[in-house]
Amino acid sequence: MKPSLLIISVTLLAVSLLAINLQGQNLVPFILPLLLVSSFGVGIAGITLWRKHVIPVKALASLENIIVDHMPSGVTLWAFDFAEMQQHTIIVSGFISAVKDFMFEMRKGDLKKLETEFGTFIKEDGDFLTVTCITSGNTKAEEEWIRRRLQTFLRVAEIRHWNNLMSWAGDTSIFEESFFQIISSVINMNNTFKLQKQRISNIRRKKARLYAELKNLDSEIDTIEAKLKNGKISEEEFEVRKTRIKNKYKRIREYYINTCLLLSRVTRKPIEEVEASREIEKIRSNFLKLKSEIDELHLKKCEGTITPIDIKNKEKIQKELIILIENLEKFM
Image (cartoon, rainbow, N blue to C red; front, side, top):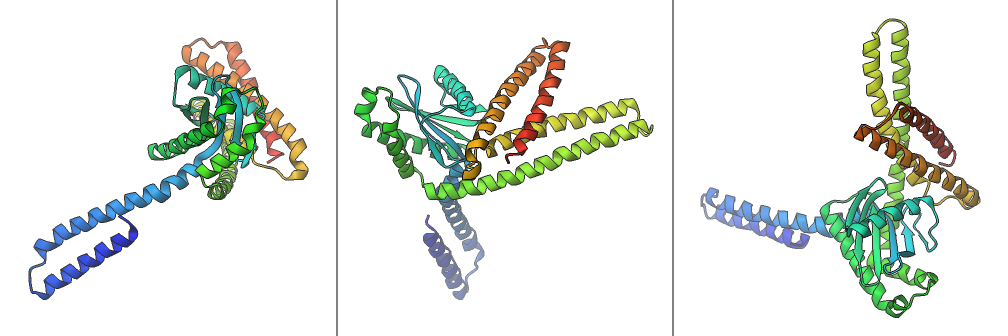
């Protein structure tokens, strides 16, 4: 039901009640059915408005990357980064290298969706192309909205480039302008740009909040250490409280690292761009390496095969991670 129809329905309800009242009839038998009909109309109108306006906005705001691969060869033909609102035809970054590992896992397992530390991967296959969208997470309705757009993109791209794809010889430049035009016809790029700008602003605020939380937890550890030295708390209480704080610290630190890495992909001022990009790429590559090592040690811990040397190495890696964050802060 459209908003105009909803207004008409409510108006008719009011007129009906007034007419019944003027006739001196008891309103009670009539009110309940009319209210039920009216409520049903309001509910239908609300659902329609939600599907038409809210779901697309939430879906567009969640977009992070779109990557288009040539299915027979597995080569990436084109990619678009929504954090930068910029397309890339030559993918060399550590981020994309790690992402490609997840995409290979999806292809091998014939998966349409995969939850990862980099985001939610949503995949659709055509005859020659695979398009993978990385998002920050969606409801089922938002995911379906995105899938319909990916399917449209695939259909148009393959019809337009059928001959090129059948005899493709390795030149990705032939797809760059065309794929951008197609994705721009599938989603509203102006709205997407505004939503992404707002999203980045929210992430910056989140980063500041997480940083403040980390500092507060550092202060809490200093406080309980002072209390232990002054004999105000026992050794046992100190260890319990310290463990609780450290566990919270690790969780928040991981959120903070991921937030910093996402912000590192945002387009920089031209004067900084070249040098900053090189440094950020080094930091990002080191992060991926350290994260992989930490994940491996975590797996050993879960399997019960972790050794004292592994635990010592984990502490060393975590210190390196702190240094990495401090270096990344200089570019944020």
